[in-house]
Image 1 (tube, rainbow, N blue to C red):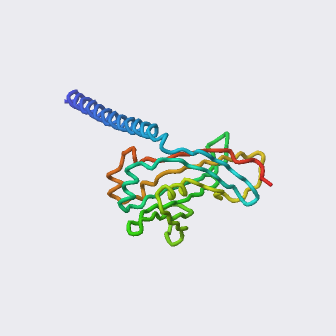
Image 2: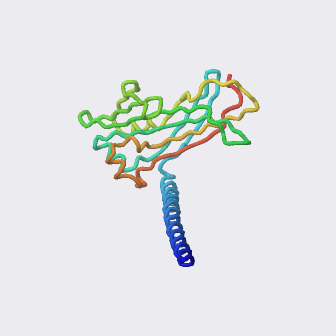
Image 3: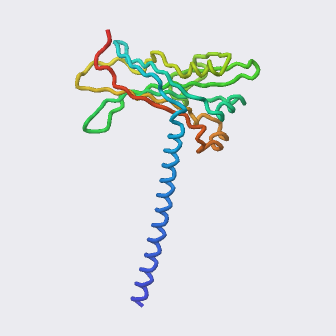
Amino acid sequence: MTVFTSLFFISNWDKALRVLAMAWCRVFFVSCMACLWHLQVNAQNTDLAQVSSFKLDRNADGIYVSAQVKFDLPAAVEDALQKGIPVYFVAQCELLQERWYWYNRSVSVAQRSMRLSYQPLTRRWRLNVAQGAPSDVNLSQTINQNFESLEDALSSIQRFARWRVADAMPVDPDVRLLLQFEFRLDLDRLPRPFQIGNFGQADWILETNAQATVPAEIAK
């Protein structure tokens, strides 16, 4: 009886290990496929958006960014806009302190949210621009602009002129600061049916980034 019980236990333990191993293999396979898809999407969208110019200014008032983002609006996004669905773009600048002994420390983060929509009655494009994360934006507190064409509206979205992204900081020769700039189409702000229907579609992925060292001296 003891031998039979032991064999039964070993047999079931062996089966459990095989089931667990197969489950881990499935998880590993799905993770690998997700990584490959992400790399493929990024490779396909490399030419869709890029930072064509990027400049940092540091003076007594703070740190300023001037940038130009170039991208071709995907057909699916333009089609959604033409149907009256607003689309959100987000720009983010994160100031980092380099640390050789650990991860870089985040000093500050600045965000700009841009809501683009089409007004069928007036046939005009409306752009709402606000400072802060999209979830915190109140349309009553935004800067509103109207444009006759989509090209003019996109030109305004793509241009960043002396955007103040950080407060003034004392100059320390031992502290090296980096600024990371990111620009993307915010899919989380789309209506729920669009989020589900467009998940995984490459023509809805629009993003680019740039990085530069903050000048060590304050400009006079």
